[in-house]
Length: 148
Image 1 (cartoon, rainbow, N blue to C red):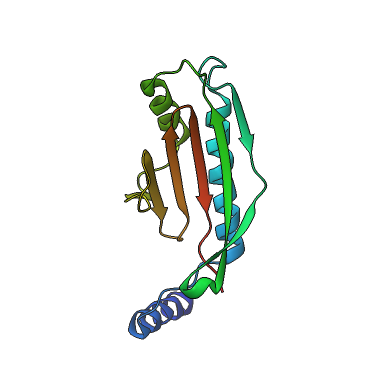
Image 2 (image 1 turned 90 degrees about the vertical axis):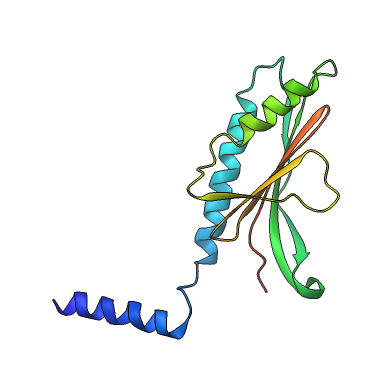
């Protein structure tokens, strides 16, 4: 009974303070990596006639936030489609890449400004997934939240 009361007190204190428990950055990064690995697996599972190669880039740290004061990790995979692939095949590959995103976890958001053929999703943890279909490439990226 005391544990329940203590837990209820903690929840009430957090609610009254107007803040939520912070997400553990290490767990968020691990989750982002799992999502990325799933996207790479989906792209790699495409028939060789649909995706000739899938290249996974090294994780890259890049500036973010106000004045570039923070950093985030970008995980990027590029699938090269056959030259003869039509727009429908490229779109189908892009759809396959993100088919595993749980709609209860991922909210579709607007693409970055000036992006053609890009779709994007964000999780409550601040992880962002983008997939861009530009003939003959499908570029999938997962970005960790900006950290200072």
